[in-house]
Image 1 (cartoon, rainbow, N blue to C red):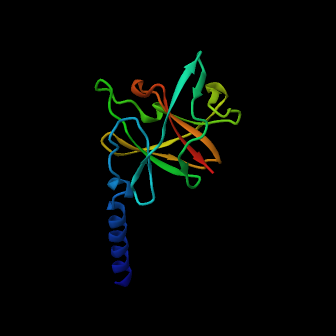
Image 2: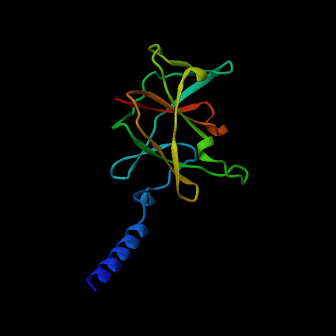
Image 3: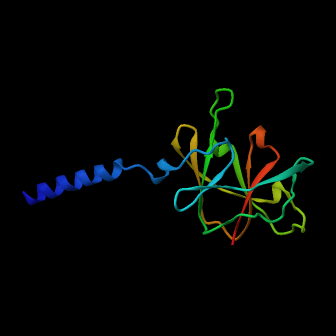
Length: 164
């Protein structure tokens, strides 16, 4: 009898735990699509600084500010993005965003880098609700990072942060 009651209690406990929402269900939606927002410990959002950049040739990029004004704490961060369909077509967020770890070699006025020489960082993407995704970046080494969206409306903008 005790075993039966204990088994039933464990089943109900498991169901209750499984039914609880992810803490990210309460994260507010970003106002603008394709612009990343850092999720803080209290689930508030901080926009990543948008840095102007431009393309020189086919694969050379220049970001005007060599040091991001935003410093992220820890080796792992979570970013929320609003990812709207384009002309009714949903595009996989993993194919839309790229995170670059910028190599040393910038000067005092700009990061100058070739896409082929930069280390791209794998991203984990999970859907929270319609058009809202959490991007998890794990095991980040100290350094400067640039987040790029392949969407036309932010073609020459990079969103930057630094890990110390």
